[in-house]
Image 1 (tube, protein in one colour):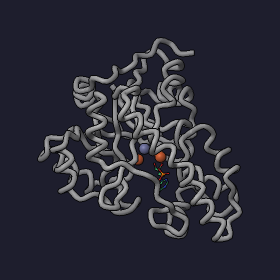
Image 2 (cartoon, protein in one colour):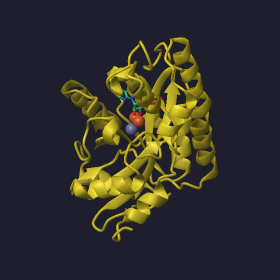
Image 3 (cartoon, helix red, strand yellow):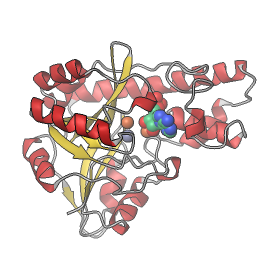
Image 4 (cartoon, helix red, strand yellow):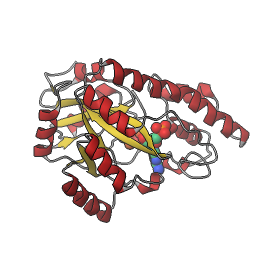
Length: 285
Ligand code: AMP
Ligand code: FE
Ligand code: FE
Ligand code: ZN
């Protein structure tokens, strides 16, 4: 069984539509794929409709959180997408991405870059708008050669010249909301240092005590040392260990299934979840 529990579509900052993502996941030989767009579930219906036979979809989202000024991402799986409290928080975060993107565009204009909201919103389409869309605009304008080159102090990295923070949820609150909606909560790429400051282990221990289910260990932004340290921490705290590609289509270089989750851990995630069931593919549209 090949299980990839963290993928993005055009519902946020990936470049495959949800339907393309399902087809590409099957073509990559995956048995289970999770759709985890940033702060939104809007890709679900299209993904379910296109799900090929033999591929199982785990519905999810990646929630934007912040603790002590440090941004972090919480993967939420198999929660009830209609549960009102989590839905309201997701919408608050997602909707705040629009004025925030406009704020970054204004800062870029102040730095002499002629990027416009029309350009960024065309790139984002109906997906929840984020820095990768702004970064794509900078590539189009020839300001930087690639999307990841825009994530520097000079441009869009946390605290960078054109950075604007967005509303982000307190992770303890987010964990409670996810659990309250019957979901399973996994801290995404907790040691991704190149994205900025990382959350201290003491805070991860407090999250475990609040109900955090697991941490993502096998991820392209973690080197061998980080993975070993995180595996030890998970053992100490009784947390599940996941691995996933964090696929973003052509906006990142990583392939579907580049990192995977152990079938036993996947089984435990499905046993803990009460908000939704994994969706088995029936052939697709
Ligand atoms: P936002 O949620 O709008 O603040 O944007 C964060 C997103 O930017 C992450 O989910 C990644 O998709 C992307 N990102 C963050 N750091 C990098 C990086 N160094 N290179 C490429 N993409 C990045
Ligand atoms: Fe992303
Ligand atoms: Fe993330
Ligand atoms: Zn992600």
